[in-house]
Structure formats: C-alpha cells, structure tokens
Amino acid sequence: MIMNMADKSFEVQNVEASELEDYMNDLAEEGRSLYNLFPIQARGEPWVTVISYVPYNWEAADLKYTQREAAGLQAEKDNQKYWAAKLAEKSGGHSNE
Image (cartoon, rainbow, N blue to C red; front, side):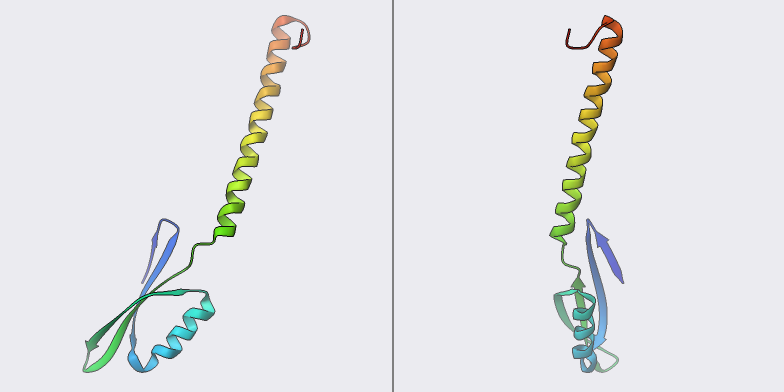
C-alpha cells in the first residue's frame, strides 16, 4: 500500500522476517528510506511491517521555486509594458512624457 501525503510517499508492507534483508535491499535500490519497523506474528511465523518513504528532493523543489519566481518576474515585466502602452494610448504621446 502506498500513501501520498503532501509530497511524501510512504509505503507500508508486511514482509516475512526471513525475507527482510532482500526487501530492504530492494528498497535501497528504489531510492526509498526506512521509516519504521514493527514486528508482528502472523500465521505462526514472524513477520515485520516495514514503513518506508521517498526522501524529499530539495534540489527539485529549489528548481521549481526558481522557475516560479522567474515566471513571476517575467509576468510583472509584461504587465508593466502593457500598462505603459495603455497609458501612452490615452495620453497621445510617449508614456514618459
């Protein structure tokens, strides 16, 4: 089961204790990190509930923020040009006059 909570992806999985090492290696290959382990007894054999997550990607978040800021600045410049042109239309001359 995978739960997405505000840019965090948690996975909860029941694993037989004998297969725990292989499962943890698979998580590492997928880039997931261990959040918590809970031992359980099911069907007469030891099992483990493993909760893992994908670490937050700070570089991607920073890039997204930088792109959003650049788009905002460009929109502001475009808005200034638009209103300068509108003002020039109404005054009949250049907007700096």
